[in-house]
Length: 307
Image 1: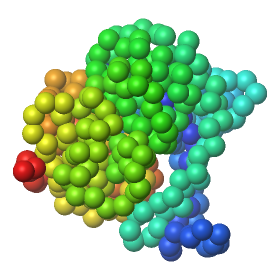
Image 2: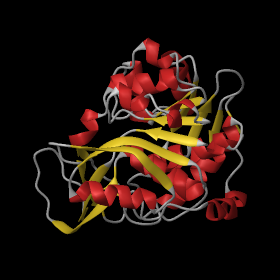
Image 3: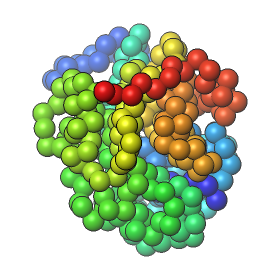
Image 4: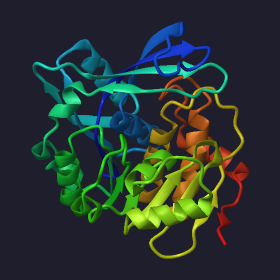
């Protein structure tokens, strides 16, 4: 086994809009479509596209949406034997307006069956034996903590949606992967643009593990426990839709780490996969395979050490 994901499965409703709405504003959507989603399932799908041996642990409802989510993961080689069907609650869902041109989006999630995932669900062989365990926060925190405790491999956590993280959970995390907003939330500071050096200082203030801060079109910042901080830019692509790019990054990072890459090389691979994922619609419309990522790697700028 290489990568196991414990997390959420959602059905996304993607709505194309000329521009994203402001607070209290109504805008008219141009088109809508259903697509598989959920941070956990998106990460599993990305990892599955990039290599074999990916397992998903989660919950869906006993409904057509659940059928679609399981089929979508199986189609990209993800083992769904530990995704449970849950009586009495629907499969989780997310509504995502996507802005034409920029590809920027807003996301509103309704957890549904994801809220029923228990610590006992995570106490399974696919978690115990995973080379890399990938976690997020769209399922109950107690379940995330139980999975991290049960792991024997490398634990990677995306702290999203952002919430306070207990110290006893962080103790079990090897690589924390927040974006800038999530990092500011964890550090208890106001949001806003910060320099890479400021972000590195924040990263070291919130965790005693390695931190990778995703920066969207600017790439990612690698803040290891020991060693120099690196700023890794992505390759040049034309972004159509950024939905799920962070999830693709995490799935690719997990696959690269499971194959034995060190953290800087794994981040280089992950920014390349994430960049490619933005060239199609939805969270999974352009997930790349390993050949596509490796073909683009020569165009990725070298990582820049921070002074």
